[in-house]
Amino acid sequence: MSTEKIVHVTDATFDQEVLKSDKPVLIDFWAPWCAPCRAIAPHIDALASEYDGRLKVVKINVDDNPQTAVRYGVRGIPNLLIIKGGQVKEQIVGAVPKTTLVRAVDGAIAA
Image 1 (spheres, helix red, strand yellow):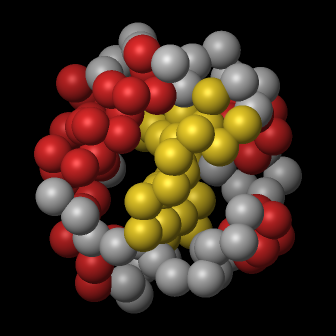
Image 2 (tube, helix red, strand yellow):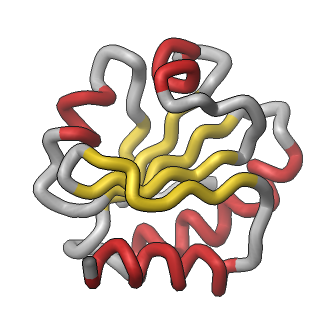
C-alpha cells in the first residue's frame, strides 16, 4: 500500500525523523482498522512521490504509538499534520480530497 518514499515512525523515532527534519514533514496518524485512513492512503503515497526531495512523508500507527498522538492532541483519525522547523503549520482531520492536501503542502513549503 505505501511506497518506499514513506517513512514509518514510532514514538521513539518521531523527534529525530520529524522535528529534526530539514524539510517540511507530512505526518499521517493512522491505524490499520481505519477505513478513512485506507481511503486517503493512495493520496499520501502520491504526495510522497510528487514532492520527493521537497517534503518528507511519514506515517505513525496510533495504536502502536499512542504517546505521539496524545502529544499532538490527535483524537480522531485520519489526522494529518504538516510540521516545518519543529512547528505544526497545518492540521487536516478526516478523509479529504487530494486537492486539500496539495494546497496545505504547497503552503507549508512556500512559507
